Amino acid sequence: MSQDLVATLLKIAPFLGFFLGLLAPLMVWVERRGSALIQDRPGPNRLGPWGLLQPLADALKFIFKEDVTPSEADKPLYLAAPILAFLPALTTFVVLPFGPPVSVGGKTINLVVADVDSGVLLFLALSSLSVYSLVCAGYASNNKFSLIGSIRASAQLISYELAMTIAVLAVLLPVGTFRLDAVVEYQSAKMWNVVPQAIGFLVFLVAMFAETNRVPFDLPEAESELVAGYHTEYSAMRFAAFMAAEYINMMALSGLCATLYFGGWKLPFVPMPEAWLPAALVGFTGLALKICLFMCLFVWVRWTFPRFRYDQLMRLGWKVLLPLSLVNLIWVAVATLSGWM
Amino acid sequence: MELAIFLIFALLALVSAVTVVAHRNPIYSTLSLVVTLAATAVLFVLLGAPFIATLQVLVYAGAIVVLFLFVIMLLNVGREETEGSVTRTGPGQRWGTVVGAGIFAGTLLAILWRTYGRESLDPLTEELVAIKPLAALLFDRYLLAFEVIGLLLLVAVVAAGIVARRPAAEKEG
Image 1: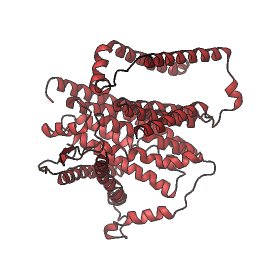
Image 2: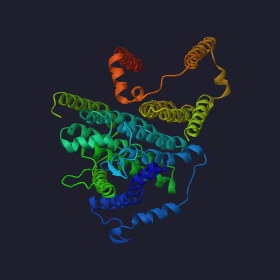
Image 3: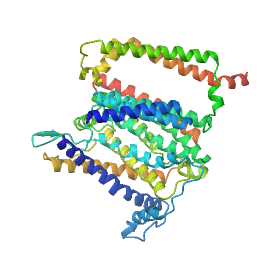
Image 4: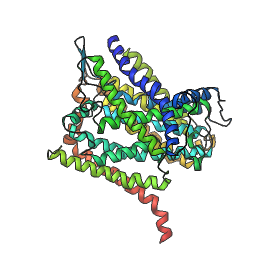
């Protein structure tokens, strides 16, 4: 019992350390410097080499700013919303495998935090709870802009979850199980899923942007019409909590995308060591590298694409992505049955 | 350990279920429903059925209750229902409540009777709760029921679409 607990904690540690300690602050820097690069201006470059210490200064600023709660706000929900934002962000990564099964002292340990049969489903279930934070924030703020942002968020998340789930289903079809480590094994035996399931990947990618409320689908916070949408009233650390949760959500979804379509933790041409610590290290580095690439894509897209209009967003979700994901599912089903996959 | 977890989440499920019915604010009611669903999901995990627990969160907490919230916020239901509107019920409604409660109580009693009437219960085995055996049951023994439910849902969706469209069609005609 206690041994299992220690192993589980050891498996959680790299994710939390990498997500919260390293990549989340780094992403603030990448986002600001990336936008500067794309808009042909220097960006924050004063603090530390290339402005690398800027996130520290930002964090200090957030801590010392005044924390405002509107007097007409629904207090319990208003305070709970930023905390709720972390619930899906900090739980979904538990089903991502980051290495081969290793044996320690005669026991076989799978390098995934929660080793359950319904792995992908658990991820989707937990990430579908992310909408509650946005809805609570918008409703509790007692502000028209916030409320409209929340309504948009709930409609958007429901619409794009469907297409995303069907795209994931198509990945699982030839593998025959919900386990993500089996998906990784399948890809290393055949080829990366992104090749035979390019349509499914496209659907997943677009849905991924919509699920994390990133440009071009950031209608819940569309600053040109809704001030800041659902987090209009939030300030100081509570606002920072929403931002951090958004980044961590992006990382977890990037991890899922890398696992489903880009071979997971396995890097091509890199031999896998047998022992427990090196294997975990190499595997995690592989997954982390792929996550970083996706995070750069998120920033690149954000500063080069205009925002969708709301009706365009709904039309894209229901009339383009959903049929596309079904076409992909039928293609994969036919290919699996006739033995091409 | 297991007993402690069971007690905590059973209590949480009961309290939040009462809150769903009793709270004046519809948003709080709906959020309590999410807590109820999540707590029951934990109970499913304790029973050794993580798949059903996952589905419970995915389908109910993740999709259906979000729709509830969406409708409540879209219709802009007031923060509190006043006493007057709560007592505004017709006679048919009252009898319907009694009949409905009777049916539910009867079903519950029947289940309890069948459970405690026996010497020992069939153990809840892996075959009963894992994904593959569930799928085999669903697509083999209960295939007809499964397909009929799908058809029923489709009919409901089409009907909802027609009801929602009617005023616009009349305007054009």
